[in-house]
Image 1 (cartoon, helix red, strand yellow):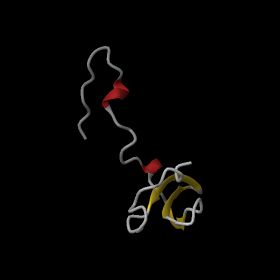
Image 2 (cartoon, rainbow, N blue to C red):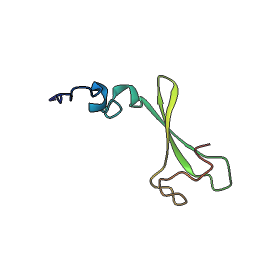
Image 3 (tube, rainbow, N blue to C red):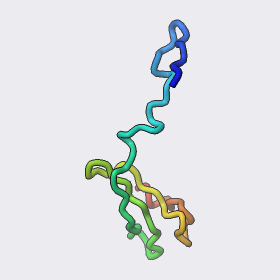
Amino acid sequence: MDCPTPTPGEPMASSYDLTKSSGALEADEIIDTSCQFCNSNCRLKVHKKAGRIIEIRGEDKDPVQAGNLCVKGPM
């Protein structure tokens, strides 16, 4: 990977996006579950890394939310 030459006076970190393709952010386990906030029981994918939740996504095939989370889900 070619590293861009920083402009003088520009912080070097601004040239890189350290969050993309980071092994630290890749789940080592994905658990299928459902949201219990209402009676729709929207399906969820809980992504875990080293036993900790790092992300919660909606299930793409969920007929209610079609892969999205409702306003209550992220809470």
